[in-house]
Length: 392
Image (cartoon, rainbow, N blue to C red; front, side, top):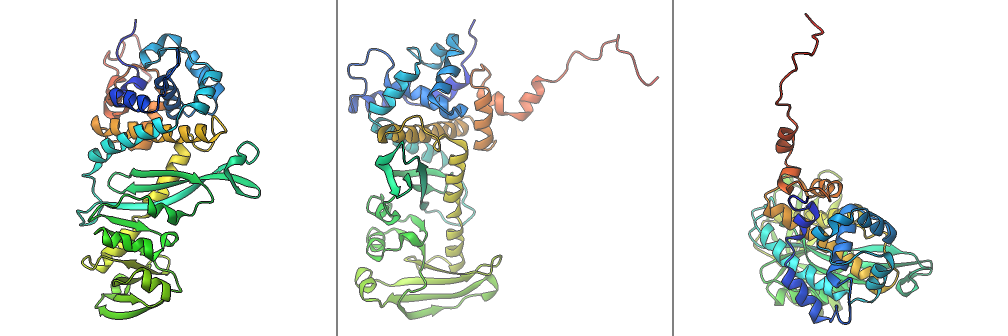
């Protein structure tokens, strides 16, 4: 007899089913499909992400081992490896990309009150990209270099909660700076970037849209100092200057004034130079903002270690994009569930607990709450009178 919701279903109940069906209808995902709908495909792939399945055969074997529970997990048809492989190859990956974008909106609202550790009320984003290697023999369409293939995942991370607010997947040979042409710019928000995004014509668009950027400067920057602000050198600051660009191309691309902050890193002794179009924040806060950019690097490291985006279930472009977007959906669903249920444990721990209890009927909050788990295993029967005492 089935009692209570399965852990997998408890996570999936945070997916708005009506929105999912609208996304499927938008791209005719279920057109002429009798069995194994797009929702069944999505359930399979999210299950694979949450339980760290390595292959299609692995997914099929695990789900078929629990036939009595598939209905309670939401499946309307049986799972076959060849059917799932075909669905990954031909069903439009944009269905799952649109679902991910909707989940991003939900997650960002839940995490918008997270503390940055800085006295800044504005939105703060970190922009970066990571390359995901592919097999050249199996994926020749993603040729990156003469001996390897790859794709690049461009991510704009909302640092309040470390939720990705913008994602774009391109061939690995597309330079990061091109992402600035697609980036949605929020007035008043801060965008933290490394030197790969230093393009003054594109950066000037941030100023025109009343957005702020903080970016590392290159060593060959040509500029003239207009004004210098006093700094406390004991904090590691070397200078805080208002400058104008003097290079022929850079001055034409960015005619407005910039702020140049030079900082000596206290731990490494490395001197870092930052450029920004914000003139109101203290210079030390500019350096602290750039320090937060490391969160996007940790995010890439985390998803590569905890989501299945290094080994793929298909080899064509559509299958790989589908897997990446469903991996993002699995991450977002876990983050939304954790926040809605008031779970205090780290997301990494939460996902690990879910992975080993995916077919269990225990409520999620009870499953991850250490104190409640300990209470469940507390011996309330007392010591048996037949137990011999070792020490009389």
